[in-house]
Length: 266
Length: 285
Ligand SMILES: Nc1ncnc2c1ncn2[C@@H]1O[C@H](COP(=O)(O)OP(=O)(O)OP(=O)(O)O)[C@@H](O)[C@H]1O
Ligand SMILES: [Mg+2]
Image 1 (cartoon, rainbow over the protein chains, first blue to last red):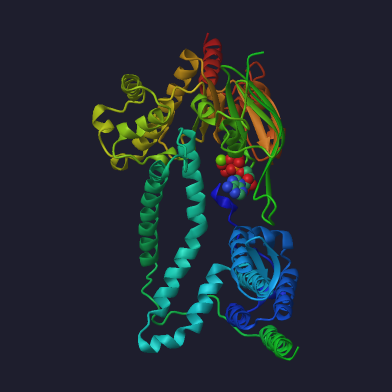
Image 2 (cartoon, rainbow over the protein chains, first blue to last red):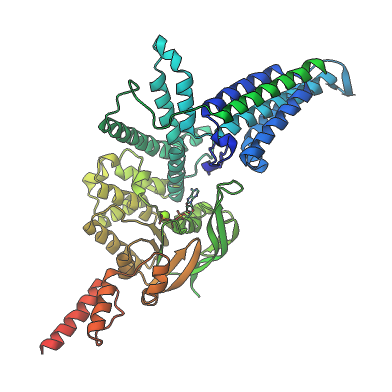
């Protein structure tokens, strides 16, 4: 039931993209997203999309699966397209009774939907190919300088790791409890809004109780292994930049330059 | 003839259309008669839990059909179906949520709009059967011991008076006495109320003790289906899919090798006890 959400789930693999340093992937994804916001020519955005899709190809993730992930977002895109097409004023392209469709409207609708699609697919290629643990490692390393100004970087990263680690567990558990209550005759998420809210109590109560229990267990397990925060702590996985990362960075910079050249000179 | 459950050509996969797709059931055919006591055994991950979740429409088959008492699980009336088929899941105590045990047992009854007097009567009845005292009924479910929690959760299902009772590993984590107690209650319900019981278990001893018929699953398919004696005589085949026969059966085979007049086709401790005693007495005379 609840298990159909596939966006952002890690997919094991051994492609070059999987093996890149997580810091490289994180930095490139964030920069690429900024680039996408600056780009506003349809051609550049189409090329960005092609670049992202080739990354999917290299990572060995089928387009069908990628499409399944963005399905929920499609409604948002359709909605923005409609808004843009009908409510942007400009040179009329088509007039029918009181509806006017302008050239600018069509243009911005295409721009916005391309941008949103590329943003989502590029962010998900990172999460598809990087385990959550690696990702938090990367965040911790990248934000390390902030420790100088007393930002609890390690603690925040640890919290994130734990949260990410338990998402699948919680989803599994929710699924089980939902099934158990449904087997007793509960109808979840039906009726008017009050009935609907009430129908979640039989799921939320056991879920909260077991989460507290889990938190307790985890705290005891961590303490009994002498965990006392980030001070002097070394890591089992040492992140290392390699030639692959250098290559990826160069490719990334080249592509970005091409995208901007296309935008400003053509 | 008295068919109450019919699965024909049922297939089901988890995470369909993703790289994580996993075929959990593959072309399963199964029919169970009213009033049978059937055990489902199989190695971990063989699809037992997936199979039983099909029986009240929690999972709908990708292919094939499931008819429960004349009703297709893909059609309407799931709620009625779920009243008819009670499923006790692995670790059912995780489903307790009300303030008191009494209210938790009442939950299913309320959902099926059973009138108040009837509710009271049924809860009282089931509490007596499962030895949940009035004292316990008024406690919060979270204050109970593991065994009490388990019984409270099972009461919440039995109180709906299902015609088909499905139990998925119901005694995992219970002590031997609690385990025996629970199965004796199930057997009583089976004998007196004539309910159909489907039991998933990893314990061959329990299966031999209580079930009449055994269904053996392996990698999403039904490998064997037959009466207890018949299935446990096919030890080699069971071994090939990582299953075994009850320990007592091995003892009887050894004794049979020493003395061929001892019956080796015995699978429960009680029967073995009788057989050995009989033999010893005879030798004594
Ligand atoms: N919710 C799920 N999502 C994805 N795959 C699942 C899910 N539940 C079960 N599976 C997979 O389906 C297969 C059958 O699982 P199932 O739970 O039916 O096995 P089982 O026979 O009940 O095992 P056990 O004896 O361990 O309870 C397994 O390979 C399992 O990994
Ligand atoms: Mg199971």
